[in-house]
Length: 143
Image (cartoon, rainbow, N blue to C red):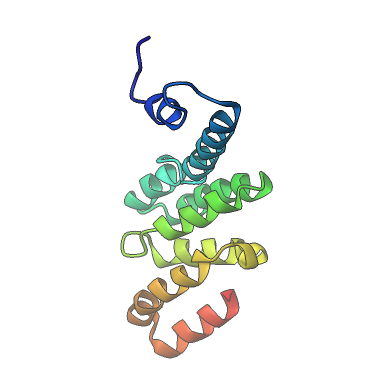
């Protein structure tokens, strides 16, 4: 019998034979791994947003970002949306795009733990662009 690397842990647990318990335990591991993989942002979730941002089309970048978050949130993919929030590059995106993302995700703030981190990363950018007082007011409104 040929054993591939993928099956070795299953077979090793049962001395070369997979028992029902071993199969169940490994199936749970596979499901957890799939859940973790599928909760990660797909590379193209904000690709169009970044493309518009690069061309200084801020309104189109905002529309694209909001469309992406709308699909994720309406689909109940909160972990994926949270992972995208973690990946938002505030140093690259126009501050208006980042603020729009925060406004749009406000209703789901309880389920998006990386939203607060995005606010913290955005604060110095806004302070530099708008001044400390204006930045504070903007971030209070989106919190």
